[in-house]
View 1 (cartoon, rainbow, N blue to C red):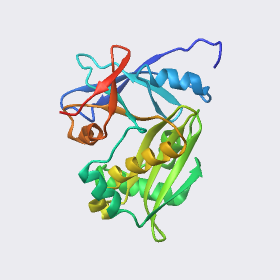
View 2: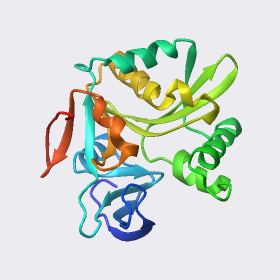
View 3: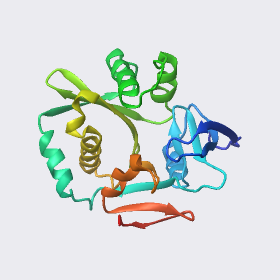
View 4: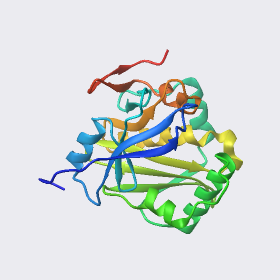
Length: 233
């Protein structure tokens, strides 16, 4: 896409998943390949990725979706996070190139049906478009308890940053707080790679679904095109 113009489209995505009585609108474009510096620049302008779609919220009367990133080199686990880390010391994590795997897809379906209570099973093609198609280097992280797959995460891995794309877990293991554990693991992985920033997508202050992101400190949020320090109140 170097040297070419990008045509942006506005999309209506239906009800907002984070705020009641709001409609979710994006501007977006599709690309099958994007250089690392281009993707980094877009993340630093508040864009996010879903499959081959790069998007930015443009919802009428709402600016609640605030990009957030963790300074992993300065991060220190809080008391509850340390407890979650210890509780999952028996979990094994494997790294794989992005690609379709039936066991991953089965867990994704179970997570959507049991946790998010969707009415109909997700089609394989929808899953592929959302999490397998990617214009940037992406890894799949598989979390095992013994031989049982209990979680799957998707990470965009660039030279200067890691972007956490999505995570699913087996609802049977809810008490392990695997979503929190996966972020703690991603922080340690970023440290291993000597990368400073882990991008978490959007934080919405009024959404209980997003509260956990504010607990990872120190963090920065994007305001008026500038990253500024963010302190959870």
